[in-house]
Image 1 (cartoon, rainbow, N blue to C red):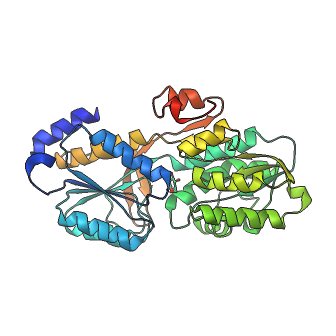
Image 2: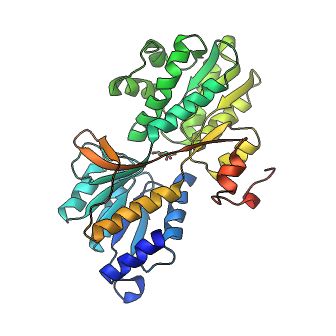
Amino acid sequence: MIAILLTGMLAACGSGKTGGSSKVSVGIVLPTKDEPRWVQDEQRFKAALADSKYTTEILFSQGSSAKEKENVETLLNKGIKVLIIAPHDGAAAGAAVEAAKKEGVTVISYDRLITETDAVDYYVTFDSVAVGAAQGQYLIDNAKGKNVPLYLYAGAASDNNAFLFFEGAWKVLQPKIADGTFVIANSSEANVLKDKQELTRDQLGKILGQVTTNWEASEAINKAQTHLTGAAANLKGDVAILAPNDGTARSISDVFGSDSDISSFVITGQDAEKASIQYIIDGKQSMTVFKDVRTLVSDSMGMAIDILDGKTPATTGTYDNGKIDVKAKQTNVIVVDQENVKKELIDSKYYEASEFKGL
Ligand code: BGC
């Protein structure tokens, strides 16, 4: 499908990599190479573009909004017409995309929404509230008995998705906190709010402020160690852990796994990173939420091509970014655990069986 679109595009714009021009039609900016999640996106973009002469360039911002702005400027100087960008910090990226808009470039926010600006045209995303809800539901489905200690962790507060994930998880977990299935182990702010099913952004922000991992392994490890050191005996034993993504899940799992007072734990994740698939096979991570990056790549490139062709891209809804409602195309997610890992990730040819041990 994408190959056909790309060929059509090439005919339409007539400028290819081999055409001797240094022009780039579509610029792609990703947040960091330090997390396998975003290297996956790069690889999937490259795979989708391999057979075309379509001119794209991918730059990484390495967790810096300044570097991100510089990347956008580099791409503007190469004459891009469409910018596909996953911001490091959703609000700080406003300046970069406003610069792009001034040059008449169409801006597609990729996976993470750019907030507080009207300089975003489209948003291509997974259903992030559903990601959090799937994580919360998994903990509920696997909770045994009453008063199960629940350790909550979240992503970076500079990432709008971190709010959406937590919001989705909280909606399903809250009734189970209220009925005594779970006891919140590590957040006084969450405890204060435990009777409210709907949280405002400010309230979510208060909880995130306490349990953020900042999407960093080191922060996840520090927090998990601190929480376990401070935990009373009734908050140990068999526990449930809401970990926001695979990278932080592996770090938190390592910490909980080495505490002799923790008898067992159920821990969530997302991204289907290879290292976490191995953790799932080995029983060190309970689940991940598989977000098929191939779909996000083909949706965003399909949109870019429509724009370059002068067509209006199809969208499925809108997201409020604090300033405007951004037209969005949303993709569903799949829960993966030991039961279906082979079917969803190997049989679907997302990964190869040879990449894992003990499958
Ligand atoms: C993405 C996740 C990712 C996280 C950390 C989020 O915005 O949606 O897939 O794990 O950022 O990079």
